[in-house]
Length: 505
Ligand SMILES: NC(=O)C1=CN([C@@H]2O[C@H](COP(=O)(O)OP(=O)(O)OC[C@H]3O[C@@H](n4cnc5c(N)ncnc54)[C@H](OP(=O)(O)O)[C@@H]3O)[C@@H](O)[C@H]2O)[C@@H](O)CC1
Ligand SMILES: [K+]
Image (cartoon, rainbow, N blue to C red):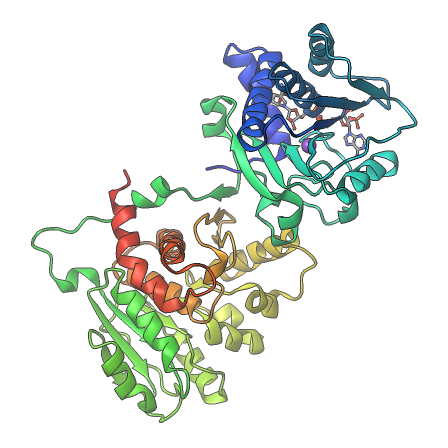
């Protein structure tokens, strides 16, 4: 699914009106009726509905929703802010329609404003500003926002919480943005919804499909996508009846150190549950018996060192390599990692300590094998790119890093982003906060390693791997709940996740 900018969303509306035989006022009516439906589903008539509308089309949506709710016998009040004395045509039409149906609780504010008292049971519809916001809110609008935010009423924002820019909010005052409980986004998700710092602003978000032209969407150019089940299910390769293990690759996992055998076990088990033909784990001597016992399906190759990775491996027998889970950051390990990567001619994935080693030896950065996959979480990424003030800045810098290294960056977190060397972003929708637990990243590394070894191109391996990892996490969460969920539970749910995703056409 494409994420379009607010500017593109305006173009999408205009294109649909011009080419799909629909009047702009009817597109607004569609949006408003979906907003009203959603409110009716969640709140009954005992709740007062207080509508705050701007003079643009976001306000028009809100006024139309007010009418629909009023005709369904909800107790509705409307406050429309007409500060400049200009109201958009469709908003004006809806004000007239509202008054024509005998609605009297309509207040138009042009300067001073006596705000209504807001109670906890009230539902506020926020239709002040949507995709037409062109600068941060200030003055009277900022005061209205603060007033709504200070109340205990439930807040439903139409399209975007008013004051929030769809993409970059670097120069925006957070106190002047509506904090919604529910955001009903018209047709497209907005990039800003995917940022952790906006969680309390956006609340739960839901898309309302108003019938924007599919031709427009198909040709719209954007670097931002949310991966959907069909996008990745069609990447899954079927197995031939006469297949044997060599058809599914031999993966090499360099993982573990003294006290960190668990990372290698988790990555190995996840790899084996994700279709690899053969797996060899290269690990220090101290982990040998532990691995052989915990993961009998894997072959174990001892490093020369008792406690940590110290000697690179000959890659001739392998189709893909993963390096990093639990390897530690000993200087000898760092040197062995660089030697390993210097001659690496097979697809590689770097995780955890391998990324930390790179960030503390930055002169090696540009020697990473092209097309490698790096899987940092925010902290690991910022050790390379520097501290960022917000998610937009972080994504921008991560994109520059991916281009500079000609590598894929899998930035882990809610909505894990797969960032390609060409500058595309694929956000992953699966997963849950229960997965924020030690070893979860090792599981992802094992999955992506298995896919690389099977010959999946890097971009597909990263997108499919992150999706299945989150899906398995969601299945595990249904079984265990968020609090008890462990990385091992994610692995245990992998078979079901692979089965479900393989069956989606
Ligand atoms: N038919 C359609 O197109 C459909 C559109 N739809 C809906 O329309 C919404 C977009 O509507 P929109 O383009 O009218 O913009 P909107 O967000 O209402 O605000 C624009 C006004 O705000 C003003 N303004 C901006 N920033 C400001 C600030 N900081 N402080 C103060 N003022 C500020 C700006 O004034 P200006 O600065 O341009 O003079 C302008 O007057 C979209 O989110 C969706 O809800 C759906 O119904 C589907 C069909
Ligand atoms: K809004």
